[in-house]
Structure formats: structure tokens, C-alpha cells
Length: 319
Image (cartoon, rainbow, N blue to C red):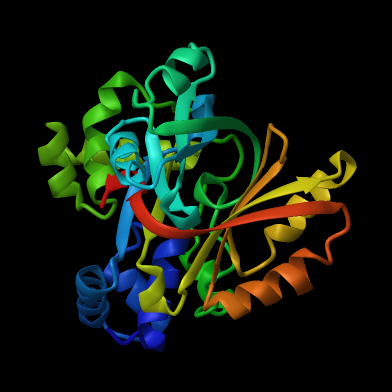
């Protein structure tokens, strides 16, 4: 599938506001709403574009852990599949020549971490090593906002599409058990209409509209966008674990958030203390990123990298 400038603009617009209407996006891009709708359907079918609505783990007080699981080559995919079927994993990837699985797990801060993180792992002698790293600060990606990879829109267009939150006191709405059907529907398709969401929840459309507004305004709910990176020209997706001098972690994290190659960056516990996901056009571009941009950051002491060979789960959806 060939991606053109308008495709990139539509994708960028959805990263800014995943629930923006076709008419709203079209007005900003200078095209008709029918054109935007056609491009969106085309990108869904051919480029793996998917918009989802997700609960914000930061607002909910959940902890996010990154697990690195090493296994025998003939068992890695089976273990990755078992991890992907867990409802508490958001993404699962196979890396490092097919012998390592990396995934994230979200658990309530008050939960029994040992039971949720380790005792639920597949019980097989083919699993040889496990390390767990708690995310202690997010710099870019997910609930903290879009990365810098998209540059299809002008600053004015970005401002026009950015959701406007009410001035003054922020909404204090929090997710409850009653929101479960709404979250399930949005996790499947974050752009479902009010009519479809009303059918999924059994609520009146007015209740759906009000609840969505409350949760988005409070930051308890956000949208994210999934794509097939190669279709957009990114053929090198790499996970990195950095060892950074403690006094430089915040500065390095802020710098990483400004790099267009970085789609996720967070400070973590463990022998390495910053975890990064980078996307580049190819491995020579990744080499330049590591040697020229990452390597020039003061405080970075060592870098471990692992190319992603297969994404088994992304944004909560098993592939």
C-alpha cells in the first residue's frame, strides 16, 4: 500500500484527537468529510490503522511493569502467545533472534505484585530467565501524549484539532465498574459512534456523550493509534534499555521525548533505568540515531538494544 501526504495528515490528526469527526478533520485539512472517511477506511484496511480508547493507568493509580522473558527459541512464540492472552498485558513483542519476549503488565498499586507478575507466567522449563522493571515516570507515548514521529500537520492544524478542555477546575470523574462496557467497546474501536456506544452500554446517547466528556476531561480516558510501521516507511522497531546516571535521568528523558524516532520513553527500576521504543526507516538510520543523537546525551552510560521481530499484541489487541 502506498501512503501519500493526505494519508499521513489523517493519521497525524487521529493521533491528536482520536475521536475527531470526519467533518472536523476535513475542515482542518481542506478536504471534504467524505474524502477523510474514505482515507480512514482505506488506512484501516491496508495500513493496520486502529484507534482505541484506553483507561489512563496513571490516573487510575495502576503500576506499569515491563517484563523481559528469555526462553528457548522453540518456545518463545508459545510463551508470547500465553502472555498476549492475559488481560493485563498491553503489548507483547518477540525480540533478540526469537529468544526474548518483552511485554508490559498493568496492575493495581495495592495488588500482590508477585502473584500477578510472576506466578501467572507460563510454567515451562523452556522459560529460562525473567526480569521485571516498574515504570516510575513516563516521558512520551501512551497516556502522556503523542510522540514526535508525525510531522504532517502544521502547528496551526495541530492546535485546531487538539481537544479543548474546560478552563478552571478540572473534571474529577473517575472510572468505575459501571464503565466496563464502555471501555470494552472503545478498546475494540475508539471511534465508535454515540449510537454504537449506546447499544454496547445500554445507556441513552445523552449519557454516553456526557460520560465520555467527563472521562476525557478528567484524563481518565485517552485515545491511541496503532499502525503497521513498515507501511509508513518504518522498518526498524527497536527496544532499548539505557543505563543513565541518576542525576541525569530526568534530563535524558525530556530530551528523548523530543526525538522523532522515540515513540515511548520511561524511567524504570532495575539495572537499566530508562526504557525506550524507537522506530526508524531502517537499521542504518537506527545506527545514526544511537551514535549521533542518543550517544550525545550526557549521562547515558550504556545502551542495550533488541530489534522487534514480531509484535504479538499491541494496544491490548492480539494480532
